[in-house]
Image (tube, rainbow, N blue to C red; front, side, top):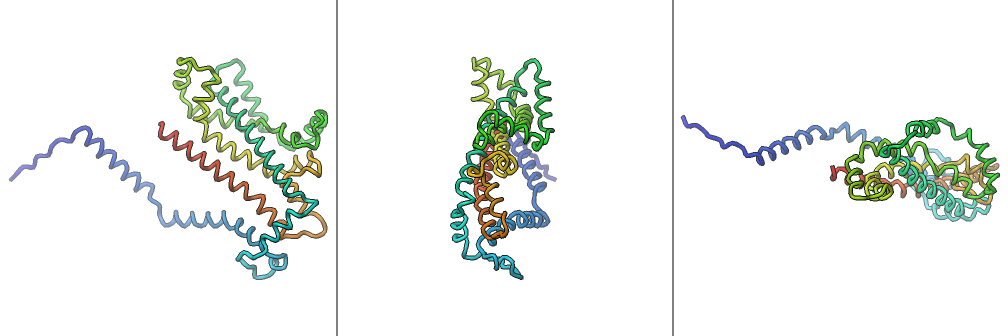
Length: 301
């Protein structure tokens, strides 16, 4: 008999072999089954079909919308309905779109900046009363927004800004949810050693936040910015109460389209479509920032 002598594996070869086995096991573990694909297809259809049906209704006449069986193919009247939408003198749809961009964009920037600063302070800075202040911030999330409508209205009247866009911007530049979200993320994502190393190098607290902490908060900031923009783009109650009729936001303008003795469903759907398109752009933008931030964090880890 001939004995087969195998050479012992070196450290580098053993590491490659172990890495290959881990990759193969992970590939088998996360391999998608036909059921996974079926669930994804159903979820995609349920998510996209309402948007597609809105496009179909916006491009059809009112008679075609109510006909049975309905048509699932877009019509040829979308351009006409959009033009008629912007020509509605009492709706002010173009101005409402611009107002919503200003309101939602300003609130989003303010919430992300203030929440990042406050979340960093609560997560990484030691100061007296931090737990009490954090508890107060969390308690603000338990107060329904509707309870503050009348006091805010009176306060804005005292300030002399009633009816302007500042009325719907100023009360919402700070978010308790945003502070709590950023704090929880900063505790997990920003190592204390990194901050201490920056302090040893002579960096100030503001410099540490801007150069060290803020880049690491990109995924949390993207999520917070996305939720904040969508929330205040779709907000109806406070703009409806606080703004003057000549200064509406897009949701108030849409409510005007559906009010009155006769509702033109094709115009309502056209307005809803035009109000939804900016949200899709924002979701794509913040989604890319979120994925980029997560990948950067994974590479650094």
